[in-house]
Image (tube, rainbow, N blue to C red; front, side, top):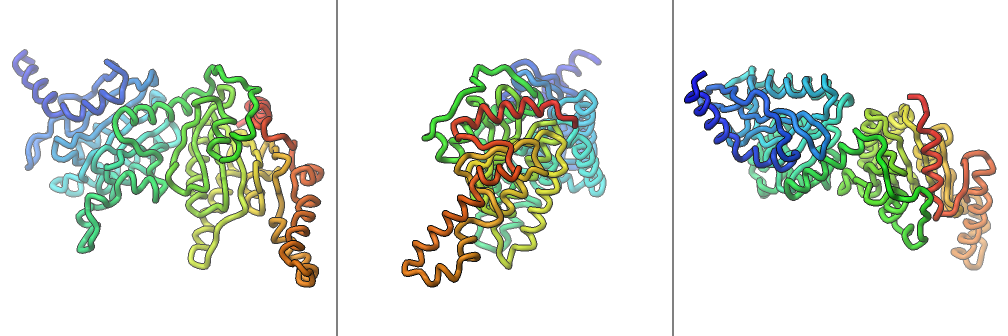
Length: 457
């Protein structure tokens, strides 16, 4: 190849990829990106497709080596066709062979319709490659701009799906989805909206700097099982810091190690990754009645933990599941799937009951048959129904005859709870390993975690 031809190829490639390379350079470590298949160039009826509209290769993100591809919206609107699908599949397959995480950055308005069925086959090849990678290596999808059509489904075969707040993820063009309605197409299926209404988007970011931090936090959890920490494993918590669930999580886990996922969705459930004395874990914290959406959110987290051998920490304050005649069937399916997944886990499972574990709250998250180790705070309540419900069921006659019915009901509920529901009473029956003061939650969980880390998978 002559110098003139090489210079022209390089110039065309760099011009075509200038904008997308800004994004790639912002999320990978400086000078770490090694591009592959840079000069592939196809000709279509719409023009020349330099690099086939995909930038791909290998890089480091905070020293974690990854395989990465990014669709280029400046080349035929980032459309997917047969040739660039093969380029993408090659990167995914090479990453899996090398045991590297796969990172996809999407900004595409869909298929190259001019290619017809060839483009559909390209999508199928990408989906098959991502499916083969899922559960074997960490997979991350980041949506910066558009993600329309079949590529929107790539988000759901990823361990992490990060979207810019204004990005749009939709199975069709937002113009089509808006139809003749009054909806603004620009506000349909945005990253921000999907982060609040679905479990597809795990994290919403504002810029590339936040994107790199989110990806790095996830990759650290799933690729570095143990890291040194300066946090004291015997650190006790202050009572004031244990009033709210989110504050409690910060007290229990190593300082600055908590990384939340799906934070804006199904807010009665907190899920994410953290470290305990340097050991990476996944956490599930329930604070209230479980919804079908919350059950699905938990299932997604559990699948990732099983894939990458992360112990699961359950933090329980759950009075059962929300139900209604309209959604009961969906709730049954979602909760059953969650319980099946939880019972199928081979990783260590620990439970701390910090509030109530009533009915499903106990059976799903803290039952001795489900977890390797369970503890509860001294004032935690565990049982079939709450003390109030039990009093109404068992002492209905006494309450109806009382002069002050509310006072009588409260007194009987307290008496029932002390005899049957409070953690010390439950521990006597062998359904808890220990009853602890709240301040000692971190040391006890760390000691148990270290014990069960040798559990055979």
